[in-house]
Amino acid sequence: MGDRYDVLIVGAGHGGAQAAIALRQRKFEGSIAMIGEEPELPYERPPLSKDYFAGEKAFERILIRPAAFWEERGVTMRTGVRVVAVDPAAHTVSTAAGETIGYGHLIWAAGGHPRRLTCSGHDLGGVHSVRTRADVDRMMGELAATDTIVVIGGGYIGLEAAAVLAKTGKQVTVLEALDRVLARVAGEPLSRFYEAEHRAHGVDVRLGAMVECIEGKDGRVAGVRLAGGEVIAAQMVIVGIGIVPAVEPLLAAGAEGGNGVAVDEHGRTTLPDVFAIGDCAMHANAYAEGLPIRLESVQNANDLANTVARALTGEPEPHNSVPWFWSNQYDLRLQTVGLSMGHDSTVTRGDPASRSFSIVYLKQGHVVALDCVNATRDYVQGKALVVARTKAAPDQLADPDVPLKTLV
Ligand SMILES: Cc1cc2nc3c(=O)[nH]c(=O)nc-3n(C[C@H](O)[C@H](O)[C@H](O)COP(=O)(O)OP(=O)(O)OC[C@H]3O[C@@H](n4cnc5c(N)ncnc54)[C@H](O)[C@@H]3O)c2cc1C
Image 1: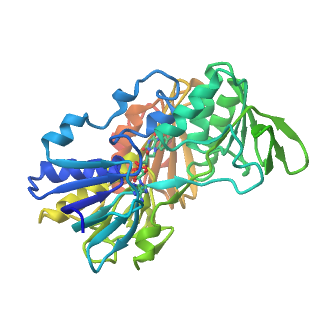
Image 2 (image 1 turned 180 degrees about the vertical axis):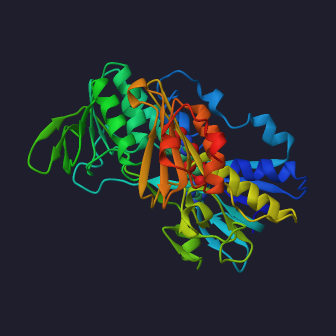
Image 3 (image 1 turned 90 degrees about the horizontal axis):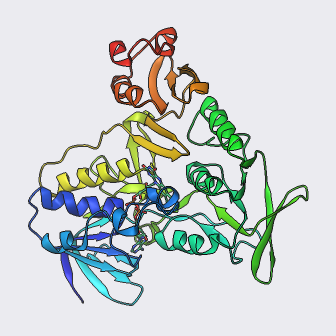
C-alpha cells in the first residue's frame, strides 16, 4: 500500500478546503491529505459564472488559500488525482492511476459533476458546462469568435452566465423548459423579476422551451433545435441544468444514498469512519422540516465541513445552520436566507421597480425564507425571522418602513 493519512479528504473544493482549515484551527495534529481531480489548488467556484468569467478577476484572486498556506499547515495536496473506489473494511481508497491510499477517517467532499444533455449533438465542439476553471477557460477562449450563444437552463448559473455575456454585447438566448426561470429555487415574483431584467438587457428568454437536439457543422455547434422544429442559431451552447452528485465510489462501497450520500447530523455516512460534506451530502435539514435534502451552496459546504471537524476533534455539535446563498446578475445582488420550498404564500416588500426589494416566503403564516434583491438590511434582519420561524402579519412584512428586526 502507498501512503496513509489520519484524515484523507477527497475533493479539493469548498468543502474539502474548509474541512482541512477547520481541523487545523481546532488543533488537529494528525496527518491530513486532500485529493482533488482538478489540477488546481482549491478555488472559489461562484466567480466562475460571475467576475472570473467576465475577466474581472484573475485566477490567483479566487484561490481559497495560497499554496504556502497548505504547506505551512502540513496539509498534503494531491491535485490531478481521481479516486475511483473506496474499501471501507481496509480503510483505503484507490485512484484512477492504480494507487492505494490509506485513511483513519475519510471526508468525502467531491461535489458533483455537471448534468449533461443526452440528445444528439451534446458532445459537439462549443457545447460547454460551467463547473470548473477548465470549463470556463475553454469558453473564454472561444468568446472572441462567438456572437450567438444559447444558454440551456434558466437556473442561477445559466442566468449569471447570460448576464455576463449580455453585458459584452453577445446575442444571448436562454432556454428554460419550465414556465419560469429559477423555478426550482425561487417563488414566482422573483422569477418574473429576473425574467424581465434579462429581457431588458436584450436576452431572449424562452420559457417552456424543450430542446430536441444540438445541430452541428464540421464537428462544431451551429444551432439548437427545439421540439416543434425551430432552430436557434448558436456558435456556443452553455448547459446549466444542474449536477449529479459525485458519490459513485461511496455508493458502490455500500454507503446509503441515492441522490447524494446520506449523512447524519454530524456528517457521518453509514460507512465506518467515512464522512461526507457539501453538494454531495444528503442530510436532514431543520429548515426543510427535517427532510433529507442536498444543498448546493458555499455556506452549506463550509458549515458541514466545520461540523465534521468538530466531530473529529472531540467536540461534536449537530449541524443546524440556517441556509444562505447569493447570486450576482447585472447590478443586482440577490441574497437568500432560509429555504422557500413548501411555502404557501409570499409577500413582496418594497417595489421591484425600484430594483431594491425582498420577497418573504411564508408557510402557514410563519416566515421560512427571504429573497433580498439589493436589500442587504432585509437579508441581515430577516435571518432572525427565519431562524425563529416568526409568525408575522403580511401587511407589516410588506411595509419597508417597518424594520424586520422589530418583528422578531
Ligand atoms: C458556476 C458556479 C457558480 C456558483 N455560484 C454560487 C454562488 O453564487 N453562491 C453559492 O453559495 N454557491 C454557488 N455555487 C455552488 C458552490 O460552488 C458549491 O455549492 C460548492 O462549490 C460546493 O462545494 P463542494 O466542496 O461540495 O464541491 P466542489 O467545490 O465542487 O468541490 C468538489 C471537488 O471534488 C473533485 N472531485 C469530484 N470527484 C472526485 C473524485 N472521485 N476524486 C477526486 N476529486 C474529485 C471535483 O473535481 C471538485 O474539484 C456555484 C457553483 C458553480 C459551479
